[in-house]
Length: 262
Ligand SMILES: NC(=O)c1ccc[n+]([C@@H]2O[C@H](COP(=O)([O-])OP(=O)(O)OC[C@H]3O[C@@H](n4cnc5c(N)ncnc54)[C@H](O)[C@@H]3O)[C@@H](O)[C@H]2O)c1
Image (cartoon, rainbow, N blue to C red; front, side, top):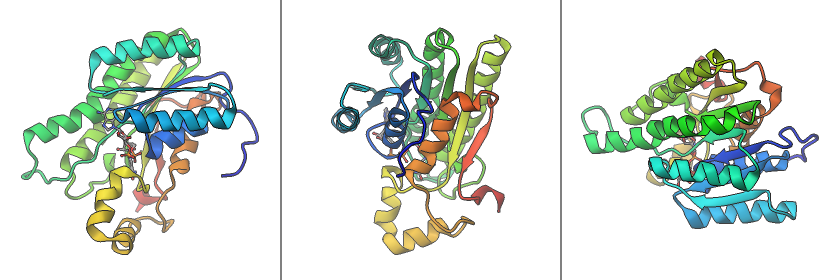
């Protein structure tokens, strides 16, 4: 990582879900490095605390907080958003990043699994947006960033529920963006669509196929011929969280090495 040349989100106060590892942790670190306070949550309380401790150590003062959150829990959203606003002195960025993968074709998938995927990947984003909006409205300009996937646009064979959930995230994000625009509030909402990044969510695929074969398969459809890095996504989130993107709302930002174009 090169040292940042400017504090692009100085003074922003961000809530990031699924921040115990992978893209959420990279996003938390990136936003903090560029001057934001970050409130990090995850079901894995121990791991998310390590990320927050690391960030605070790097900065020599408290800029990160961590708490346990299951994003499916509606009441917990209300409690934690209030806690985050109180700890950081407001809330101006929400990154809905927590998500789960799910293997299964249309005929294989059980309804309980379908509902689990929809609850974590889609419903949680509705809850986050719904209950964060009063705080974001009070801290304009504000930004919501929802982590979707390339799978919103290109079918990932064997992943019926995941594909569907990520497509729903794109349209949910646009709906939130237009709601805000119609209210004439400066709260933007966009979705980010990564291709394959080496994180926990793709670990089962690597475990099943082995390093070489898994990489070969994943890279096959990517014009840039490599997997993405967590920071590739974190930089996209940084841009969308910052006021540099003040005219960008209801957009689908691909971070996919060109995969969607072929
Ligand atoms: N890695 C990729 O290739 C890739 C590609 C496209 C999109 N994404 C999306 O990026 C996001 C982040 O995933 P990642 O790649 O960092 O994987 P990851 O598995 O490392 O991170 C996901 C995090 O979400 C947390 N989580 C799972 N269920 C939760 C719940 N109910 N409540 C709160 N937290 C929960 C997990 O504990 C984990 O820390 C996901 O939404 C994923 O769908 C990832």
